[in-house]
Length: 205
Image (cartoon, rainbow, N blue to C red; front, side, top):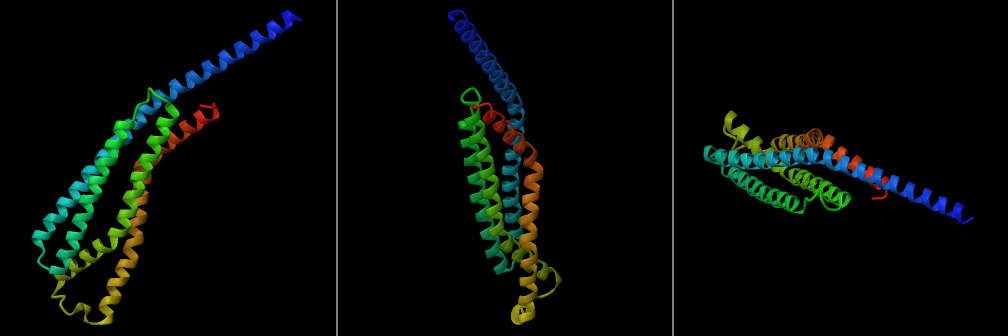
């Protein structure tokens, strides 16, 4: 009876070792894959930061070329939003860099990184949603200035109707395009991280 119990205990111990070995193998494999995915995502976030600063400089240049006071006010608002967005993006990237350590709890690290990147993209989309009507309005007025004197354009309801139509069409269209661009640029890599996290969850990590 004692020999049977001993054999059973040895069998359970061997199974436990095999399971632990499989988990370690999985963890090492996911850690190796995640390094490349995270490097790519970090690079894309860096490009996004430069895009924000480049956009801000472009709007600053437009102010020097544009003389309409209404447009100038709209452009100053846009520049201020770009400045705040750029600073937020830089801060979030620094937080991500400081917290990223794949040598520690792998699942928690990947979950935290995944959440932070998703949060950055969500911030960007929400800020953009508030900015599109302002940008569209500025572009609309600049376009009118190129065509003719627009001093009387908004004196009638038709002018306001045309402006409102442009805003109503462009705002959701730009928002959809921004979400599509983020999905195209980041979606595949975020999905890979989500799959890796799910695998670790299945193994009881």
